[in-house]
Length: 355
Image 1 (cartoon, rainbow, N blue to C red):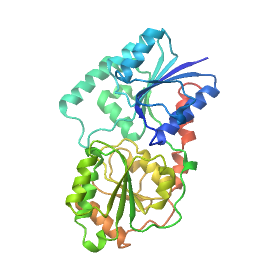
Image 2 (spheres, rainbow, N blue to C red):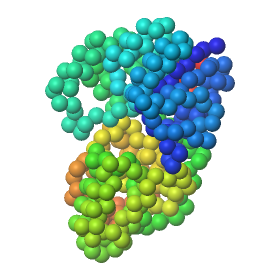
Image 3 (cartoon, rainbow, N blue to C red):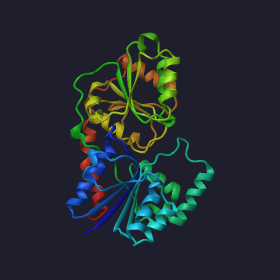
Image 4 (cartoon, rainbow, N blue to C red):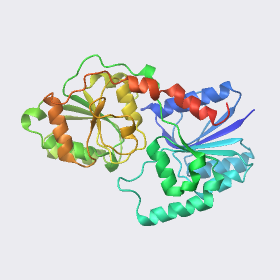
């Protein structure tokens, strides 16, 4: 009977059941079906009914890494596999994990990089951490080709043989398909922080001619440290009637279908679950070429791409879409259903445990 620990720097939030939540539950079910015992460690939040079948520790008083190590010391429990998600790679944590029972260690990298890369001192520290600690990780998993390449660039190209890509996937069955155009209605589904670029979207709408502004309604789903600042920006630019801040919602699988396009003006991304969710709902996406976005979005086929931070370009794309100079004529959901679906993601991750 394989003992598996999954260590996630991830907040459990009952108001937003997203793609990773569905993955965690499906992965747990898959492992148990093959006789594994799975123990989960999450950094914050609270357990709720969606996670009722998982054996969970919520690490409120320390980092999820320290919480896991403390659990090991106290319970004297050894694991055959330790899997990490959203945890910083190549830290001394992995040495301490490896030295306690010699588990097979798998680290999944979901962490985006800055638009122009890390500063020199950060790059040097990463190289050093790679030399010191990469040997304690048996398998590096990038959630996109972009992520895999950055793992190698950050921590050393000598890791190539034990680094691979497993794309994120979503449960496409829960997303209702758009049946109508919903002209002029846009959705943003994003954490509200500077790197997500919502401030650029506000600027882009502000510079639209009045006749185009009057055609637009943008619903923003999400929470974050920039929320009040963004609301103030909207107010100061007289855009209150065009932007609606909706907060987090567990109902997004039902809501995407009511929109014309999803807007994602992000500066940092690995492989966006929000993009997959929008496409699964047959809603095309306007986004930037950062991270793995261009691995799924093909301009003119399932969305449009603009340079991150280029407010004028974003504004022009919105205007041309409203003028019908740019159109997406074919359904956009098939690329997700054929390539980025949940069962494939779960199966690929389970295969790392030899299941």
